[in-house]
Length: 350
Image 1 (tube, one colour):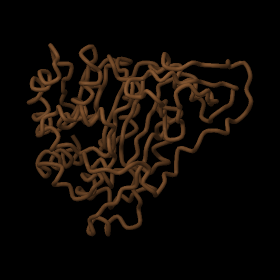
Image 2: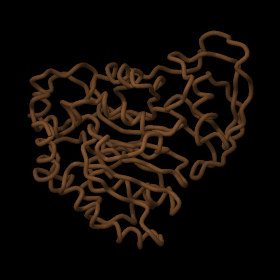
Image 3: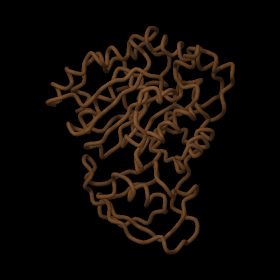
């Protein structure tokens, strides 16, 4: 491993005992989760929760029976939430490189299997670097969903992480992850600071570089789900960072053939049936596509595909064909810049 990888292992394995030891709130989820996530959290062991260092809610809807990979799974908090939501027929695989974090995650596999009322464990943890997933013998096209929570910013080769994730997803699969982004490129000097890197700040991608990289590896139309500005709340760290603005952003990236690099209008529409678990009244695809139950909504071709060519298909009615192109679709918002106002209901770190 590189010196930077060793620094990250040292920071998350020894320097941080619990989330209370963080020097900033970058690795702290300030988004209030929905009630069903709160209920799932109540079943997770306190030690697992105390070592949580996420920056968002990296758990999408419609998870029953899915095979999920968590990149940088840490103490296993998100894996154990997902374990309950995928159910006994699903599987959750966590990957992390820090022994101390893996020890906690593995320590409670049997505990959670019993707590969830399962007859066998549907969760396992592998030791590995998310930049070297090829060493774990994970089959290409074998996961329905890949998540990550405030970890990809810690990687040196972020393009490889995204490319490997794309290759591991099944056609129609999704990468849904929360991470830290910046409003400009961060200097080499700041990137060399081990505390700033460990606190998920100096490894953050400039948002435009992230979009370019995601599209380059095959995720043609990245969709922002939720974003919130990060307030560092540490004078020494803030002074080092200067005027750089940081954002916690949740993105969803679909592996779908035929997505276009712009939103195009084919005269199509969809209606949400209200049948996705925990989403009876409406469904949010991203931060600018809200679908009330029963309402016919016009959509661009990419949005149509994101719902028609994925696990969401059975929950929508689809109207229109691809026969006629009407030009640019006017109803889609931009992927960025992010708002400097808090985008969601704030809550305590969870």
